Image (cartoon, rainbow, N blue to C red; front, side, top):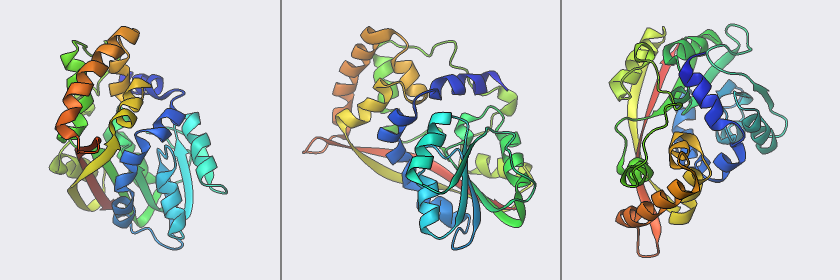
Length: 268
């Protein structure tokens, strides 16, 4: 386990409910395209890796797939079990998952490679548990991202906050360009064939206070940054956020936040 993996476990510990109420709706936006990329339909034996709040699992069940799910955070396992009764949901973390070789027709990971310290090893593991001829499909956030993705970070910077030392980054030797070509190259290096990678762009709409609620609750890396100087730091960031968020506000106060993600797929 790398320092980044340890940092990620600390970030997400106990935050499943807060994530489900905030950023989960944003991450669910890519689910239909992700399942299409993996050719998920009736009878597909699918594994949802990093199932989070269960949006992928629920959508795949709705397509008639035979779904199992896994997540590193016990709270996420509990949330997905509640969202998808009857689905086997287990605790497990990349790059070693508790499944035999070739167990699934398709394996998907929605915004999961962002959270592992050895992305290539993670993809090799996804390939291992997918049958020959099966598909692996993943999404990640693009870097640099859309203006909406940078809003809270800009507010934190304006408030004078800096990334805490304990918030590790992916080691340089394990990192890769968070671009469509960079993600495609990673899938190819993992041994996948017929690799395709594309950018997904959309405007996420949210109430300004609802969008702030995730970082304020410490969700994700940005939430840890916002909370890194205690209540005074949170208040300082909120003041800057209230000003900067007006750039994205409609007449009724709703925020329209441009986001950029990447979707890649490959065959075993």
